[in-house]
Length: 300
Image (cartoon, rainbow, N blue to C red; front, top):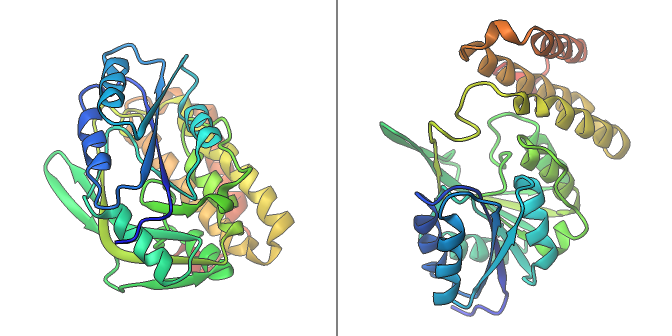
C-alpha cells in the first residue's frame, strides 16, 4: 500500500521491563511501517532504560527520550513536542497492537476523510479476553455527534487515546494536563473540538492488558481523585465552547464520579477516605439536579 504519511507513535515507559519488548515488537511489526516511534523512558529504575536503548540501536525508527520521572502526562507531552508525523498514535508500554492496527486506522481515515479514526480492542484479564466492539460496522460522526457519543459512557469513541489515530493538526498546541489518572479523558475532550469527522470501526486492533499491579488496577490512591479536577476543567470548557451539550456532559460527569466511588468502595481503604467520599457524593448529587430522565446516564 502507498504509505506517504508518517505516523508518530508515542509510548511512555516507566518500570515496564517485563512488558516493553512485546509492545515494541508489535509496533515495529506493523503492516503500515512508515513510522517514527517516540519512546519516553520516564526515569525508570528497572531495566526499561536498557531495553529502550537496545531497541533503538536495532531500528532507526525509534527515538528514545530519557528523563527524570515526571509522570505519564509530561512524558507524552515531551514526545508530542518532538513528533514529526502527520498522524499521531499512542500506546501504553504494557499493552500491544495487532499487526494491522495502524494500517486499518489509516485506511479508514483515508476512506472517510476523517480527522480521527477509532478501532475496537481486546481487554485481556488474567482469566479471559473480551473483544470490545458494537457490531455496528463503520460509523462516521460529525463534531456534535462525536461529543454526544463521547459523553455517553460506553460510547464508541471511548476515553483512551491508545486505540486512535489522530491528525497532527487536530492535536497541535494541545497538551496533557498534569494528571495521573483521567488525563486522556480531558485531552480528548479538546481534540474532538478540532475534528470535523471521526470514523469508528469495530476491527479490534489494540490489546488493553489488565495488570493487577498497574495504576488503574491497584487499590484506591489519591490519584483516583484526579477525575474530580478533570471533570471540573471539562465542565468549564463545555460551558464556554458548547453550552448546548451541558446536559450530556452532566451525565458523563456523574458516571465518572460513580465509577470512582465504586473503586473506593471495593478497596480495603474505604474507611480512610471520608473527605474524598463526601466530595464524590456531593458532586454526584449536584450533577443529578440537571437530569433525572437524561438518556445519557442510562447505566448509572
